[in-house]
Image 1 (cartoon, helix red, strand yellow):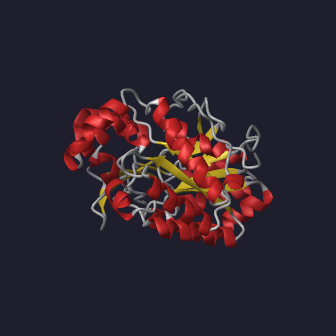
Image 2 (cartoon, helix red, strand yellow):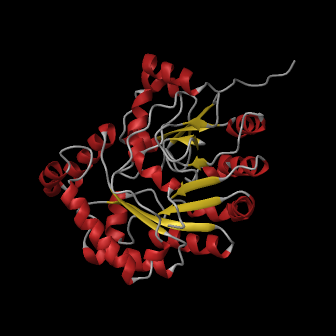
Length: 346
């Protein structure tokens, strides 16, 4: 009597369909004004258990990201769907439409001990489509009711929309927002982060969150060799972070693994071919050479002291944590997300 419509596939079922049929399996994906395709999926779990990180649980309402940052570590996770880490990452977005309901059930279980949940470890929870689906907002409301502390990483100024619930979580259980602003240099921003809001708009969002009572700071991460490592660019960014009242600041050099490295080197070959040889030498493995990292970190430390940010600095690790074990069907957290576990009182 009632047509309830076709239920969206699970992420696992969709992965199998893509392996069998390729992109034609995305025949129900909707195109929107940004030209990306949005495929609705269902998830069996909302909270994803991870190992080897300073937190045990992650939450990602979406998979893929229209911000399209060329260095994004999460690009390599698309290969689990046999989708490329390049254009597919920013043009095919999986939307977990039942996430909030699943999350509420998980938070209601007696076994849930209200550990910190890291939000946005493998996709930006405030990429533009959040304005339509509001899955991040719904998740935050569920986490508030579930008395659960959170850490949240984003490049999206839309986060100020949820300042009320973020502040409420913070007052009651603990909440830290980490705004990613690798640089305020316009040329580097346009080259590296084509789908993101301007850096100063993100910093204004940090100021608004702070004014609303949210513990919000900035991750100048990743610092990208040759694009954002010039002393003048580092200084301009760190000064801007201080001027906008960030509660803290952290920084990390870019690392390149698997599919992400393939994409980034392809991007360089196309847009900045003169940099390819230097990058091949600097990134013989996944991480930049130790001496180079030490030199850049020295400049950053000096500038943090100059602009009185050193006292607002999280404890950083000289060695990057090991890649955590696979958490099952969902995305893994990445080493740079160790920021969510930094001790802000250090």
